[in-house]
Length: 91
Image (cartoon, rainbow, N blue to C red; front, side):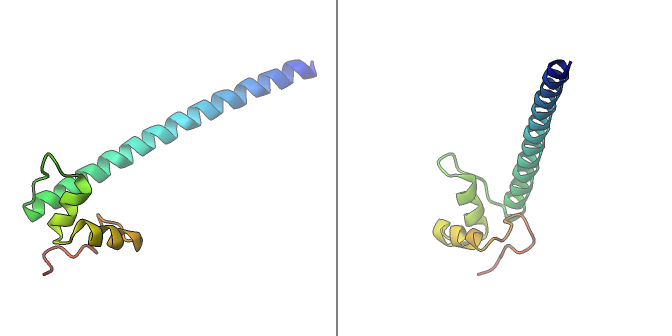
């Protein structure tokens, strides 16, 4: 009887772990999509169009009038690039 309960508990734990992983994956996808939309909104607001040979980060750096290197350093400070702390329009 204990073995049966142990196996049943193990199956339930495996199922719950699988369900939790699926939820985390979906949550991550939703957050990624929202971030993408926010960045596209910033680019549009700044009148910047991402070029085919440029990464989204490079386009965002260009939108805030920074070099890619400066923008990477800016991000390294821990500031959310989609927050209102971006120096948009600063020269």
